[in-house]
Image 1 (cartoon, rainbow, N blue to C red):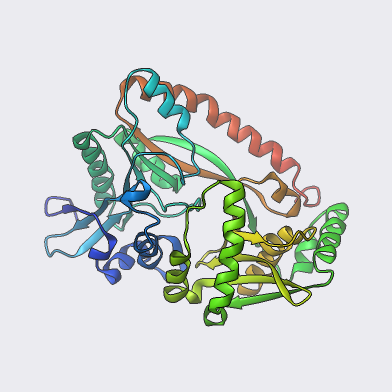
Image 2 (cartoon, one colour; image 1 turned 90 degrees about the vertical axis):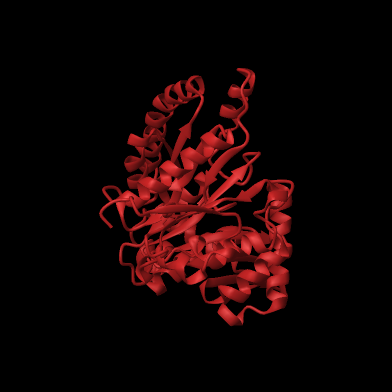
Length: 384
């Protein structure tokens, strides 16, 4: 495609109305870089289970780009929102500032995977002109609908750079990822750490597994009783951390039915009874640790199930990295190092836009400095 003269962009209020194969063809065109979270199955599971819905403040408004032959050549997962929950890139202060100035921050438009702080593709298009047309269309919709802003969270750095000429501001954040340097085993990975950290991790793993049996379940090996137990764990963690967990049992039922081959569940049993569980999803380039919970308090079991078991599996599958979720400086001592995240923000109100630009001018170098300081405390041998 040389231009966008023959391009039409539509709004899909339900992903169910978009052809599954056509969506996946633009979202995940290459199996080597497969991202489970932007697949039709994952996003549709969120909608069908009513987790991402109008009632929950996530109104689907996906953008679909079609060429002259009516074939889908681009897409953008987009939601109209009346709150800022479930995003993990926090803009509550921006909303408060606009409200104090007499403006209205909500509704806003959010290009994201709901409740999923995982970096990945956000505009799906092979052609740069289609990508730009979709980003510009989101701005046009915001202007016509009276929305305050458009946000693309956990996007790639490259996309943020390409969107800057359209008026999108780039924001930087931090996560902790584990990177596979071609390790043949967990012991080989430990060999790259300082002696003190290596011994500490070994002690943690030994303590976590005292009287505990850890099972790795994948695909159809995950029975309904396993999903039921995992959901019990998820609700316990969600209730303590957020007060009201975002996902329901129906969502995980859809996940198990449609994406079983991408799901890996680590279950820890103590005295023959399940005590904790951690769910991971397999991508083409990473293992994604997503949800964890426990019904018994066992020292260091969280680190074992969420971090060390994930490293074991990533090494076995020869995956380049493990992404174990948002935040958590405690991951640093366990071999997970700071990795930048990016988001792009278009803001309609000139005053708020200027204020956010000043804020980002201060925040961005502070994030970079923090990352550098954290890297100095990584557990690897000096010089690694």
